[in-house]
Image (cartoon, rainbow, N blue to C red; front, top):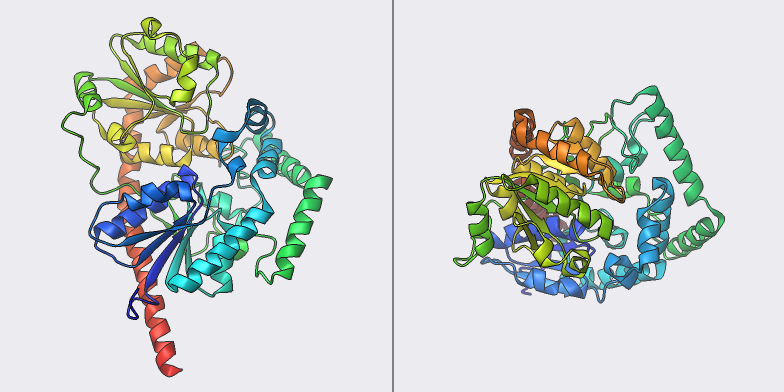
Length: 468
């Protein structure tokens, strides 16, 4: 790095989880496509190829934070852990998730590594995901302006600012609640507090807070509200009207809509999947992300749904190879069903005019990408923030919901897919929401925001050095 470049760098820091990582990867990809230099992307080693493979004339350097924490990846969970974290009361399973995935020693290790990176890169501005407390801690310690990337509903990150009657994060409750739902909302908050205050959890947290205080961290309790207070900007990938408004939202919260590339990567000349989509005028796309593990019974249900949708409608199902072992033999799969373990670009699938319904698990990126392309959705809330995304999609009129049960209800799924295919209102609402999301600016405005804060911080640093 040249002397002129010091103090003008952009440092991006995030965990490796797809829901957190992908929006920031796209923002960095936009900066690289614009020819921006001196961009640094810090994540765990398993994400190196994703960053180094970004096209464009700019310069992006990958910085390794070392190996990912094994238990933070659902791929490493045994069946008992998976069931404990994805079944039962939502408040209890959120607390259990924190037990499994929060390792305070590892967080301190990432914090120290991030300090080293900041000292080496000397960034003008940092961009960090909302769950990377260690990156926000390091930015606060080194007094680097930072922007927070919020990939879940922003109310989840800003929950300390919410009015009492606002639906509790992770509850899956709507903005307009019946008296029974209002009681359920209060009950969920109480159960979550009780779960988090369970003696062993409380003891671990108090020890960690004491260690963080001793280390001189500004926010030893890792309260999102304090991170938000210090942030230069908060970037959310939705819009109010889809997200439920709340009057206490800070002015620095920027509602950007989904960060979808302006130009999708072109299909390969020999892309057989693209030709298959061209050949089938009505396609239901099924994709449940990288975490959900459908049971054998749930898979049989989806195969039956596909069979009964044919021959008029085809079904494309993205299903990881490790899960395909539970499928019936290929000879017993219906002819209108195509199963793929990996898609070169999910966005290209959602953008295809023949894809008429997206059956997904309710994760924020999946829901918002479908809205961006005006694709009606059948949503099956899976875990953590998924119920919150689902209720917002249903209230916006772009989706219908089914319960995540085992086995799944075949008739309910078929009836709701039929409505999504036949009733124009879902497509019309999806097109209206798509317009609103796109008008927010998405990826273009996100990249502009990062560069504006970079330039302002670099100019302030230059003036300060001259005065000094």
